[in-house]
Image (cartoon, rainbow, N blue to C red; front, side, top):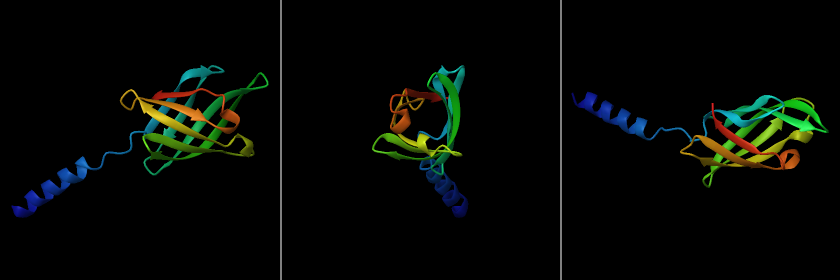
Length: 122
C-alpha cells in the first residue's frame, strides 16, 4: 500500500510541475496576406516550423522556415531560418504572450522589420 501511495503522490507532483511552455502549439496569423494566413508551429523541444506569406515589389511570395525558440524574460524569442536558397530572409522575432496565452504579438528584424506579426492559437 505504501508503494501505491508513494507512486500516486510522485505522479501528482510530476504532473503538476510538467506544464509545457506557454508558446507550445500551433499558431495562425490574425490577418491574411495574399489571401493566406501565416502559420507557426512551436514544439516542446524548442524547434518548429513556419510558413510566411509576404509581398515584395508588389508580388506575393511564400517562404517556409525552420524555427528555434525559447521563452526568455516573459517573452518568446524565435530564430527563423528560411528553407532553401533564401538566407537573406532569415530573421528573429521577440513576442509577448497575451490574452492568457491565446495570442502572440511579435516584433521582427531584418527583411521583416516592418511586417506586422500577430498570432492566435489555431
